Image (cartoon, rainbow, N blue to C red):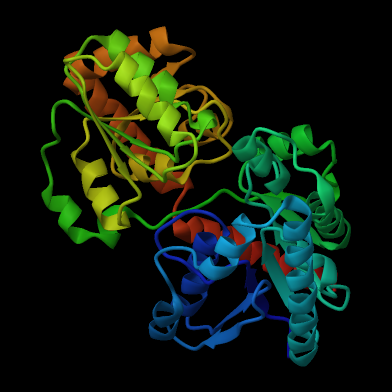
Length: 399
């Protein structure tokens, strides 16, 4: 096989959530739209598919990540040592399967998205590898944030080993933002070789083209505030709640995002701080089309992350010309720009900005149009695909 980019993912491509499988879907869609075939390889299951047209891609694409629920359920019942042993044994067997499939493909260009311990058992040396890291500071940090304790044991050691392997063997290493790179190096203590580093910003399809009916929604709900965020502490939902209360305006706050172990604590906080003039709805995960319709109707988007590497929900809000009241952190700054007028450093500043949005509709509309312009110029799918295409050409020249 000639050196063509094979998109290597930890899950099947998905069209309506974030992460590596969403980016992989957009790259494959771009390749097929240009008249080329697309190749997808799953390094966790060993699945390999050749897509000859967009119809075949859509037929294999899901709207959410797949998982082996039976294995997950069994692992939850196991003590930590047994759990680590089972997971590492499964990964070893899968690694052998992946190697057999890669041997059949021959010499090729692999664009690997994400990291998993299975990569320890996959022989990548015969292939040219571009590696894109999508996590917030590494998978190790994400596990740390979810559990409250630094990951330990064999499973954590296998993740570290996989990271060292990808850092050493990748011809090109990409991150979705400078903030993502900084957080990765800060948490892990590992330095990414600058001579092999490229920053490629996420790009998204224009929601107005994805869902033509959005264009018919011209009037927003005067008091609708929308936040799209998983229920985890670093998303700053507690800060958002405090800001809304301090703003002293009759908001209807809708939160879209996955439930977690922290949800119960957040609900308790809402119960303690609930104000009569604020309506709060926690919708949990919803269909992407529903999220975009709510976003289109919103008066303002509230993004109060404590840590942000590059939030796709921010880009979607920009694309729909929404005013965004946000914390000045990491990826938010890269998306919205250093001169953005609606930055808040704390709940008092955020509350003041919410007052401005509520009391001055013209100011909110002006900022929203500015955000739309910035999205079109910098963060479309077409630009991301072009940037990755340039990387593929560069990497092929290294062989």
